[in-house]
Length: 352
Image (tube, rainbow, N blue to C red):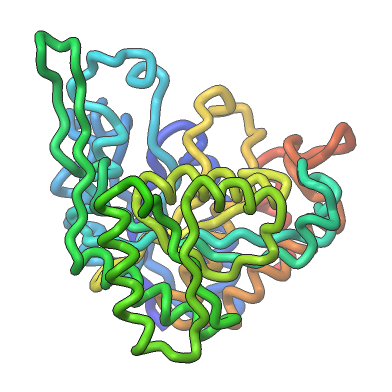
């Protein structure tokens, strides 16, 4: 199969971890007889420095023409430390999601047997955890009207959702639940927020179309608590943009490292795959960044974008082998021997 993939390395450690995912993907393609064409494009601070725009039209064209997008990370301290900056790397991320129609962020959280003791939570709390968040990506407070008034002394951010936006996200949640344990949790704050009441009534109206799925409705603060207490009680969770942003980062530490979790952002026509971590600028160029989340994002890409489950399974298998044999970066070494980003990538590719 010919696979045309847009490659957006981005900022910070993005290029380093993307390089390892490309190595592993090329090894899988060689093993299974595929031909990958990688098309690099600029985004984030790198794009601002080059052309003054965090998501240039040229990059968008590359993404639209590709079968899938593999993305690294966005962000740079010179913008993080300058609240007055008019153009920011993160604007490119929001623009990319909106223009590509990536309305659903798919964020799995699972545990690795060899790393179960590295989690900050007790083993008996997290064993068997295998949940997936579907976070709405292109609506809500991040995209609502925002501004200042009263001479800059008062700020506002509006949260707006339409029924259609909720329905298309919930539909993916119901469909995913049907392939898993047939449990769906709608996370909201319907006791306070009107947008949450719209979410709840919309999902309730859809229940009749999926009679096999057991649906629960929980407030976001309660879910934040239960993710720490009983994460293995959840299967598929759907929620709005801001709540999902916070809860998925909380859930990511269950596995023991944020550097382990992959994700996908999908729409009607386009699909993008990326690690959940940020650009980690302090580690840029030091060859210490954990590439496994990006490598596992490539596994999701083979499975979801190309319907190649064997290829995805081959990547997951070699990642588990690396963890079991201690071929890990310093964040997972626990004071023991560690290896560099490139060395881990080389080992994974060699062992596919």
